[in-house]
Length: 100
Image (cartoon, rainbow, N blue to C red; front, side, top):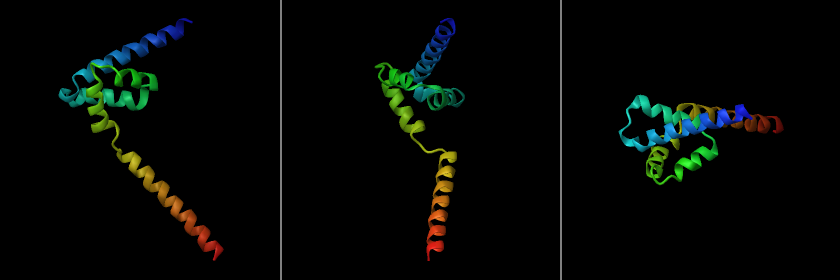
């Protein structure tokens, strides 16, 4: 039971830190901006995101961060989509060539 309590305490600390950064969102320096963006994308659970997004103190800042940083496609996302669609077109083209 002890490790679970420690993990819960660590998660609560990270969420409180992210919330503190979110409260200053539009005025965050770039070095500090990367931390909440990485946390939301990689570490935060659905519960963490829900708790922060529904918090009246930071809900507006979260909406701005989501619009500005989290909902945008990153370069790896675009490369993956291009490779996926290229592979799909090659497979469909190959099937069409073999069937003709």
